[in-house]
Length: 379
Image 1 (cartoon, rainbow, N blue to C red):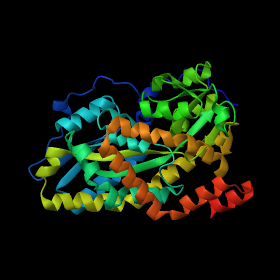
Image 2 (cartoon, rainbow, N blue to C red):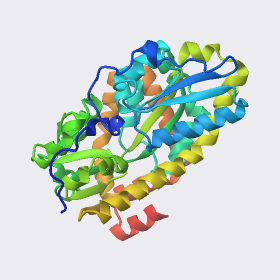
Image 3 (cartoon, one colour):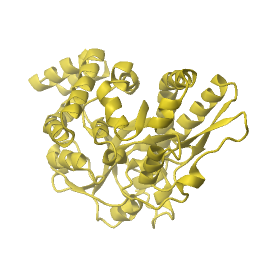
């Protein structure tokens, strides 16, 4: 396997949303970060990103800005603040809660601010169809569910859209096909109880390590595995110090597009309608973007290393699915009845949109050849 010596300088600022546990000091204060009107006729909305230029979130922000400018006839400018310009992740969340910026993304680390958002970290909740998942999550029946809206508004936030950014992929120095393969493996997770419970259930040893230390941690053997979307494995060169990428399709990396509650409530109906139209138009667009970016990044990985790709069969996935089920009880214990209602609402949406998944699970549990299961999964 091709190795790259040393940790790349400044790596922590790349795609921190994929697992940073750091709470850096803001590089700009809320006063200086707060966008101002560029003229008497133009209103500026500030949009804080968890990722850098060229990322899924950045492309979403660019397209959103373009749509809002068109729909407002140039009267509204959306100004993007890529990761690092407003500080760390909690700095971004603080500033949108306080109204210093109007819009922001929040993903896995947002669970510390909105505990119910950890729903998106549960394994085997969604379907195997990424486009269908994007549609389910942004269906008004879920996106505007009263419990989801209430969870955010209690924290001075307004949820606007839900953005899947690709599958979370395991990396390791051996092929992982069964829970037994995880036995004793030190796998890096965010400092998140739900994820620790999940990977403990799989038989691994969840280990917390700062995002900027991951490369050297794996290079030095302090970690045996990692969990990231494909684009993060490539951007941060994690694949250079691991031998396998394992695709279990257990969970996607999901970000929530949100606004400041008071700001949103003060918007005119016309401006609220502009936002609604834009986020609906962005669902198919950003699905194509994340598919393209993750495909391109996987090509870069395979062209520049000897890493082996492992795709679990339906039967292999089902073994992990069964072990993940009790973690749903942990989620309910952590967030309460509202979280349970929201989880059940999402499960119902998934089952209604893709009843074939439930039928396939029953077939796998009852048995059948691996070839039959693979054919059923492909269908």
